[in-house]
Length: 429
Image (cartoon, rainbow, N blue to C red; front, side, top):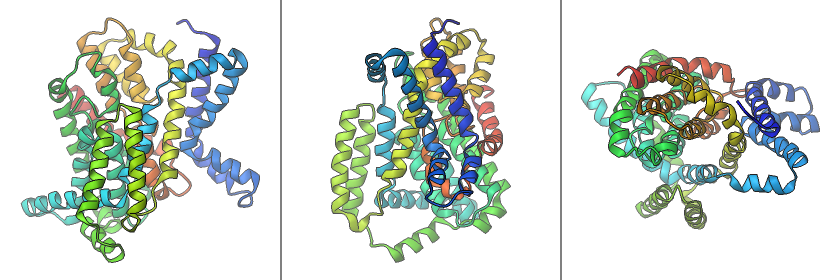
């Protein structure tokens, strides 16, 4: 492996950022030892925000980069990066977290859930959760994974009324895994597939027949297993979507159909232009104007939370190019099975879209090796928050359910079983 000094430093700083993510819970605990709003309390609280970790280390690394290579080279490197995904996730999170979009999603899920209840005679709470985790995750193949994660996480957040550490880790683990594989029905929605589909000529039929149906089976099995194992906990700690709707309808003004339609059109416009930064940002700016004149039917826009998620992803992208020196040779020297296993494991410490992109730069990969790389990348997308870009959005929405912050090791352990199911479906079926 050949590398430059700056590439080695890029990998070292990236490794420090990964280690930092496993320490955020402890850092938040340390912050409570100092008076509120004191300097040390504020600094430690910032360092304990998992969304800020990669941005902090990326900032430190760029300071070293400028000192070593000069301002001109740093600007040249910065302009070579593609920040479309962080901007897109910022826009899609803000739009999908609005009251009209969430209300429309709840109504759709309620309709499907009622059909399942009549057909299978199952309790409403269990059916609601199953439908949310299956349909919400699979919708990522059409409205993109970040949008699916945002809407699904908000619905789960409204249903989960009491805190239960064991339950919330199991729930968020299944959510992360299901969204990661749920976008694999089409070639344009899951970032790891999108990165390679054009170069490898993977069209809709190819993705659906090779990944899609297997992913749908895995999503369904994960949701079924979660609901079956935690059925008592769900009954004790959650309310049905019908109860959520009843509570909200008594406290909020009814949303006119026209307002909902306009919001859905803006969402569709952003999704359709999701690969063209200037286009979707222009649509998003228009949306902000519409949101300001429909305040009666809005909750506060989640600008801060969406910005933090974008900051998180931007930090990861900042480091991406400096991992090519060791990732590309590593991936190129593996057998298909080893490549699949390696992709699952590597996804835990690097964004799965970055992993498949780097893999696409390796010349001479066989068709089976290409499948192994992408299948492993999406199967491992729920192991950590950094494994799949939309995970940060899901955590941001559900973070208040984790007193003291999420513990990455607990998430990793909770994600092992749903990940194993995804591995089985994508490799054995």
